Amino acid sequence: MNNKLQCIVTDGQGIDNLALVEKPEPAALSDNDVLVEVKAVSLNYRDLLVAKGLYGGAYDPPIIACSDMSGTVLEVGKKVTSLRAADKVINSPFRSWLTGKMDSRIIRTFVGGLGVDGVLIKKLVYPASALVKMPEHLSFEEGSTLTIAGLTAWAAVMTHGKVQPGEWVLVHGTGGVSIFGAQIAKMAGAKVILTTSSDQKAELVKEKLGIKHIVDYRNEDWPKQVRDITDGAGVDVVVEIAGGETLARSIKACNYSARIGIIGILDDTYSKFKLFDVITKQITLRGIFMESTAELNALARFSEKHQLHPWIDKVFTLEKTVEAYKYLESQKHIGKVLIGL
Image 1: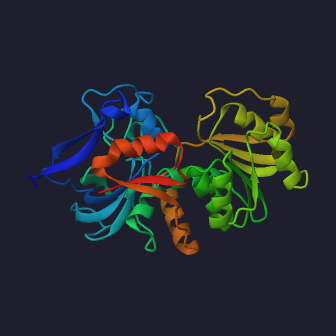
Image 2 (image 1 turned 45 degrees about the horizontal axis):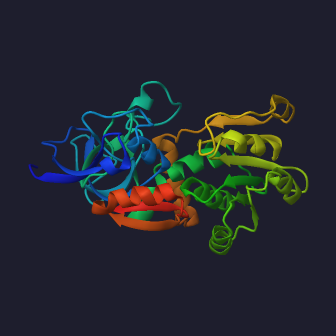
């Protein structure tokens, strides 16, 4: 393997600094690794932060960008028994978080940031233990979206949210995590309320996902609207992607014993809310930073069982990566923005 591979690298100094370069193929596989031909890569808000140096700073030398991929196994190491050539796979975002809790060692293996090479390259070597067989009913484009957006929503709604049939789930906006959260919640038998400021997006979500209850978050009294929809009780699970004042209002919209998965900081990194509300209602606040390979596998199998199809907004070519990042940054999308290889 001595050919050159095209890939996109980031130096953390701006989206316009993303560069298409060539890197050599690896000389040989270790016993426990797998060589994958990457077919599609999914973009996340985190990728914007990495490109702008807001997620671990600048990188010298630059690192390979992005965290989510799907692809086909080309070759397996001598000790690999879980996969074989021609298997379709998706990657866990952490190279060594197999199961259980996060720790200080695992977090340093998060690909596509913090100085660790990502997956936006034609061929990729990855630990077999951190790969999951892609759901058979999905295209490569759809499969690539499970790694972060799908897994984050899964963690918030199922792993830690422990949603039950008949409960109410609140999701904010129409980005990748939120759309996944709504889909997973509905398939688990829960009822969904979605917030958005766009009438056009609201109509598309109603039509495509069958979500009946949508509120405009520009109305500062939206928590009361949520409680009215739930007959005064409030929601049981929140997929909180905004933080800031939005989190404070989400708390006001909660039922007793609600579980809030705190995922993003689109609103603000700081939030001011009444602790009395959290204490008296026994609300659980849980930071969500993706999940393990075991949970990604659980999501993949859930997706197969329920025939979940991720919402794909637009697919760009590798050469149009800068445009893809800028489109994601514009927030004009619904669901996921991808790069096809």
